[in-house]
Image (cartoon, rainbow, N blue to C red; front, side, top):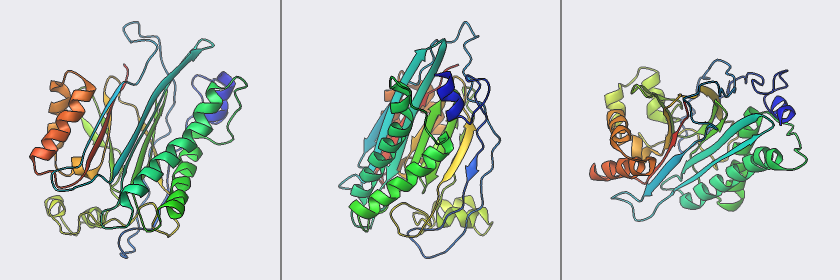
Length: 317
């Protein structure tokens, strides 16, 4: 297992600390509009995937409990979102490594087979990551993957893109994936679904960048955040899977919030519910599942203008 981890994280001499992953955020073009807007890379610092068991008060082995919920919303008659959530753990060889794979996809409204595209993307991405990462880890011979985590996620997104072009021609979708290995959180992202890091002190950070025309105008200072929230083109994306032009996803490493949460959601949630409501809902709920259903209910009570999908993951101390 230690040799497996050394290879996976880039060949470090210490398997439990492994090598720091370099973050990649690669520019891409593509999407619902012909704006041709270009993005700028997101840069984050290298992180270590080390899992510490030295804290006697920490739950050991560490795991990633999660909850999830979906709704058509109040103004849609069918759901074009899709989600996938997997949490597992391998404890052996004096090493304990928890794994989590969580994916949200939002099929593009107004495009043929939007709901098919999101489902195809989820299945293709999950299948690729599981085949490349989980199957070798749990096999008897422990075959070492040739790719790093970063390369596996990037290739998985492109695999999903090709699957949509083949199986859902004309469809498109966002795709946001959180892969957690030990204390290493890596996000691959295309579109305007979001990933958040939520800390126990109430701090909340958006890890992903919306690949929307309106968000880009806001970043350029041409409109304000309040104007962006009500802009008539706020749902127009310039990057998505299944839309023909070649692209590469944003791949970003981020510090895993200890004793906190990772939240993935479609814009049917974050576009309606405030960050304050998200924090208050998590704090007041008795379970992760209840928190997810409560957030969906808040979004629906606010009008539910779009499909809603949410995954909430709890992180260990």
